[in-house]
Length: 180
Image 1: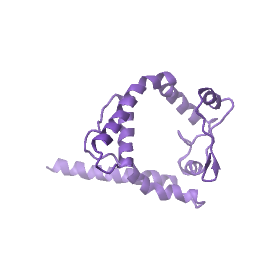
Image 2: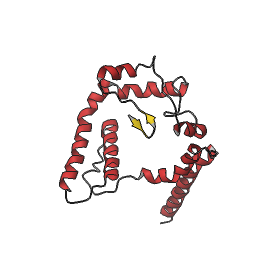
Image 3: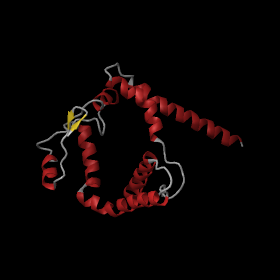
Image 4: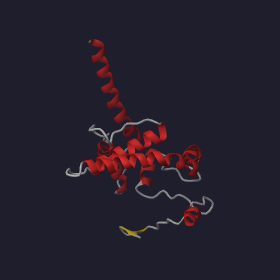
């Protein structure tokens, strides 16, 4: 399939999937813009090459949780959450569907239930979903600059700004609560 000038191959036959997942024959390329993230973030779960220690460590930790046997165990929970989303859309037929918000809720509920046994039930309540895209919007210039070929921002600055702001907010709230 041609995807914006890049040829992508999709495989759905189980035998072909097993073949392309053969780690002795196929590697994991780190292509832009992810390779640019690697320039300032270093080797991590998504940015390490498959022959690096960081990749091997993450691979060994995550593989048991994403094995076929483990996924079969999660299937019922994942199906339940997906049915909750469909039920929500059926109940709100006359309303505009906010797909991004609902998919955020779907993802949050699926990971919480399947991974940690916790139910947020965010699809059945009117609470606002977490807004990870706000942080992404703030970080977009940091990711876009290297992707455009510009000079990347210093790594320390990227990591410390959100932490420093969060720490300052925590100190302010803690100080205010101890005064009362």
